[in-house]
Image: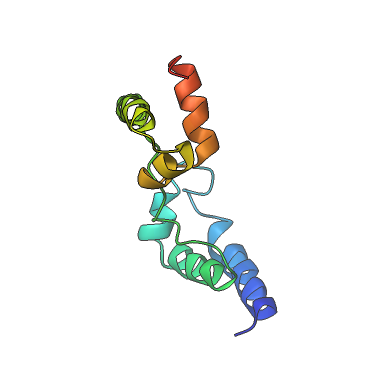
Length: 107
């Protein structure tokens, strides 16, 4: 199936199933991705178009996790590691690490 056909099929599924759905305006989109047959099919077609699977969302880091990462970053920096290396170690961007450290007045 090419991308044009996938887009058309997504629109058809939305017209047939989503227009009258009680979950249409709900903020709980996980229902559509996990329990609704049309939603699951739409998500699969979206992945075909280059999107990501809707149920595989990254969980944002908590303040507690950032506190730990920033404290460790200071220690590692004193040991000679660069912030780029530290960011890679914790799977965060260098910019995000700098922002979080600045919030905690560690840099």
